[in-house]
Length: 273
Image (tube, rainbow, N blue to C red; front, side, top):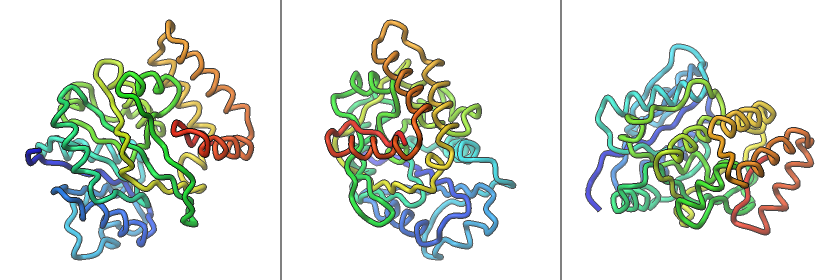
């Protein structure tokens, strides 16, 4: 593995200071060098004021709260302008294990045909209880097949080749949520997307998070992505459409229990609820 410039993007809006510090520390303590860019999405208290003084990070602040997609687009613009070769992601509250960036970087350098790489996540409740794992095994074909139904791996595991964003564009402003799913499907349509079987992050299943609070809109955005990247000759695409429509009709509490039951029986589970 050779040295490469990697930029971790971490959007934040009124973050919990302790969670912010924990997530930042996990990125700053990687086994290979990685720069961190915190994009303050118009927080009431500037996020820069919450970051420990000894943490060396780039701080961008949007003039007003514009949403996670706008924050990510600003971070990508910053990274491309400063000639970073790779981007990785981490949400406030999630934790990257120390070998996360090194593992993904080595794989990307060994596989130049891969433009987006994910990994398995350990799903943990806000009380600290382990719920299960999340990810897809089987290589690019398995990932592409699953993307017809839902996200194949967590956004916080994204490791993206910068050149892919130059060629294919950044996060789509038309998707204020589900922007990660849209980007993964867009890249998978023309390039290869893969997922490492290694568990590289700890993902906090926060019931107050964006996906939980805006579940119905999230599902509509997912359906929009599925229709945009339709594959009428693939049975898995029809299964994905039916699954999304079914979740729209299922009460949140029931869907959540179904998801949690599914987590215990397979590694291909999703946090659909």
